[in-house]
Length: 271
Length: 272
Image (cartoon, rainbow over all chains, first blue to last red; front, side, top):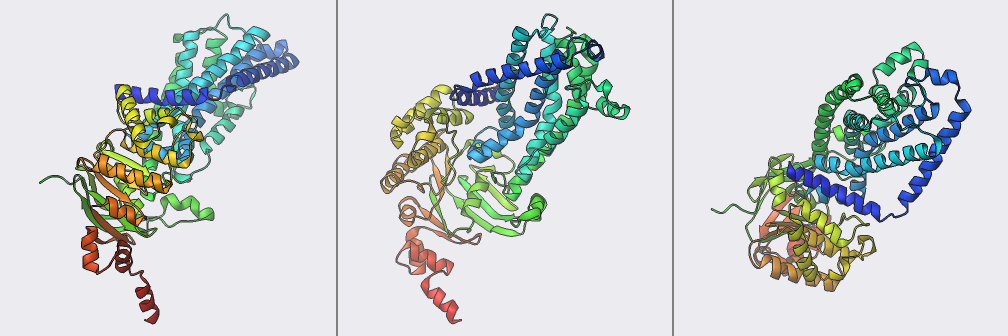
């Protein structure tokens, strides 16, 4: 266990050291976050009405609702994208083969390679929210930060399985991320990211109730905007953990099969 | 009896045929029919250096990649330091240093030292032990001045040396080198061979299996030479014994004679 933790740290150290060589990126991303928060603020000012605020599940302004939806999308994107992107980068740079002849394993490499991207995404979200709070009145006074962290971790667990499936697809077919394409596409319509699911037609609301993103977003908004505690969020957290239980073991089995298949076909490092 | 450093028994490897267009989508599930290795058996003794000699596509890299646990064989068994490459791959990798001459695989934005430290620590070296080995190998490979520079700024020859240093970092008992001097200039290649022979092979603890197209390199480094053709082992013996048994004057003639690719054999096949 200690060895695995040490290896995970090594991958994080590698990515952090590489990221530090691109010194201006953080500043540019912080500026980008400022513009992003401003766009949501002014769109919200344009569309916000008392009726709209009443229709929002947690109440409050549309700005807060949409900004949480947007930053959550960023997180979901990271969960779906990071595994296969790490694998693709290692394969294209030629480091994959050399990693695989060390004492580490591909699953540890994949898990380790996701730590920095998740940390960077979390930091980006913090910057977005900080700009929103400092300049545009994003309400942070009620936030239950412990619950927010628990929801984020549950979200990671719930959606990492899909990311691992994407990595398996990449191993076999070399390009493309259909899980991300399908899941983000469906979730942007029925996940409640930029509008509440209760405005959807009945049949799409049924679809939304089977989509874990709906529960993750609901829990996130309740914790961040409504100050809900972990006990009060048991239902969406249970759905997320059940989703993780349903998808993660299967995705790991698929990944192990895909890895063995590429070692048989000799295409592990093919581009 | 001492366990050989490498034992390969009736090793076979088939690959699916290469496809293009929409059929490439089905390639991961295609039946493997293209022969890369056909029942290959050989041994490398502890402390021995064995060269793989063969034309492109003879199966040299496939054999090295199976031994490095990067490929799963279709038939037969391969063992490194007594460990099966399929069932005990982690144990195999612990004993193994692997260098592929074609793809160095470093992080270009990290310095040479950071790259070596990263790979050394993944091979279970402590921070202090890795640093010590990096300093020692940097001296031997004359890359001390390159250690603090990002890999993207280094010449291909220096990156090649760095790659060889990486393969030796954790002091493996078995070294697999695929065209080890491919990107080195003549002087660097000669120095590397001397270093390999005097520092790595002479103490007798490290076994070497390497593929090379450079025949003087093969003669200089190899105790024995395995001649491969179309995935089959044609002969495996000391260079002098191979010359004697084939009546050839040079290793090149041995190779041409055994593979039937010599001028004489071409003329024969034309005549036939």
